[in-house]
Amino acid sequence: MSVEFSEQTHRNMIDRIPLTTGREVSDWLRTVDDGPSLVRFEEKVSWLRGAHELSYGQAKAIIHEYDLRRAARKFGCPG
Image 1 (cartoon, rainbow, N blue to C red):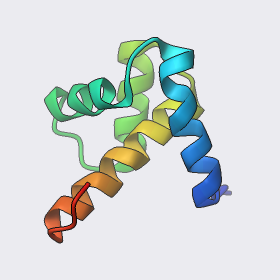
Image 2: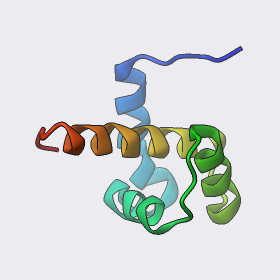
Image 3: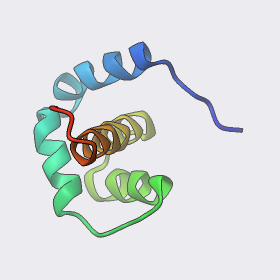
């Protein structure tokens, strides 16, 4: 069963990423961009967890943010 989190929960997690990982979110997004060409969300999360020793929640938040920003660029929204 999948657990969906609110936008506020996601924002809180993203805000904590630099504190808990020592790297800015923008650095993580570049890491995902430069990483392997994986298609499925869970594949990306698993790769990020394994390659960078992140928790599931951290990796999920980073991939979700990556997907949100990619979709915004696709539709011409600033972000």
